[in-house]
Length: 262
Image (cartoon, rainbow, N blue to C red):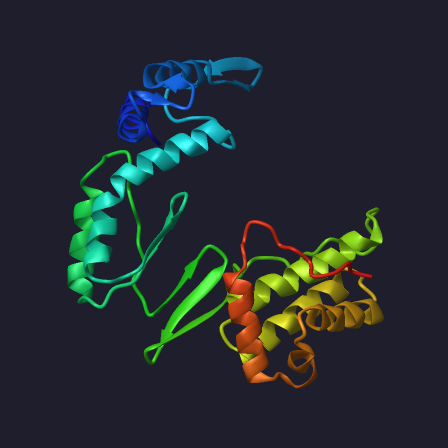
């Protein structure tokens, strides 16, 4: 959990670095810091009919807290990013989950991560080193020198999808299928892995009351919309690879449906 003082110091350094004449937009850096202090100083919560003031960290779910934490982490991770860049390796972070690649000996990697753990008492990292690791909802593997990705599901996760009997417009259920298939095509690096995930989606839909004809129609419609029907018909490898790369390269912030789902 990030202390208030350290967070504000990091915010000040970040703003100063990116400011023009000590100003960002219409606000001076000092004004931004004062506003940040106002937010942090008024973090309160109710527990057991008593009000408490939060003196360490910030409110979970607050856009400001998330931004402040990312700025703090951005400063902390620079040495790791530089280390990876010099070795032409990957580094990625989403909030407090980090993924890296390395061709160095395991002992060297552990020594590096242990040094990083000593930099800041407020940030403690636990790590997994393996040829197959999960990162968010992706399982990433190095299979004989080849990258393989698939959907990662926690072992205890229930196969829940918005029930067909729920009181939602029917197009919401159609979009549910589209979104599930879209994610799986993006995350599965080969057609065989995707086909297994497609079966998992179908089972989850059936368990949540979706009629088989409704499922079949929208599965076919998904591939038709992307001119990729051979994938659904006979698991066509080349067509799948083209669609996989196409969807990976599209913006992940707005999933546009090619045409209206019916």
